[in-house]
Length: 199
Image 1 (cartoon, one colour):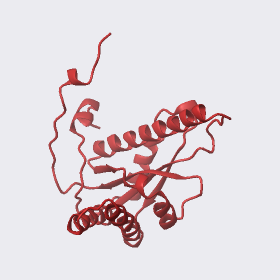
Image 2 (cartoon, helix red, strand yellow):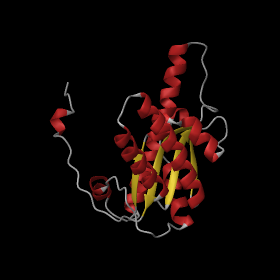
Image 3 (cartoon, one colour):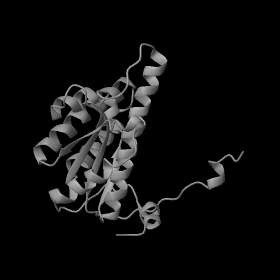
Image 4 (cartoon, helix red, strand yellow):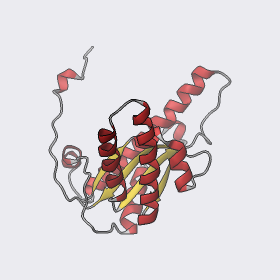
């Protein structure tokens, strides 16, 4: 096990993977790490759809690509740019050994009669689910795997839900591609003082 600081500072968003399957027990260990994230009221609103088969990954990539094309076309984006974006998205999803669609459910969250508190409760579920995703990303890095967080399901939740036959209350939030890295990436961060206020 790597030092926690090494994992945090060394994790990168990896988009290209070796043609090598990720064993089911390894994926299960990552998911187990994910569910130990903190959550609002300890309601654990996260849900995970693990996509392993080529046919399912390709179906998901196609459905999301069609939604992307339609949205960009409506925005007036040139056709060549649309095809470049859609092709890149397709290859990232269909080419990953494992795709994990991170969802949330409001089933166990509190309900309120007013919009303000209902909205805050929803945001608490979003935050909780994102923390589970971060646990998963760090666990993947610690296991020598590459992973990349993609927010694309937010723009095509109905397409994702239909392709994966998700339960009605599962709301797609993100898509994590996962595999053994076929690239190395270096990233920098802005200086800490640009993001912090001391009071």
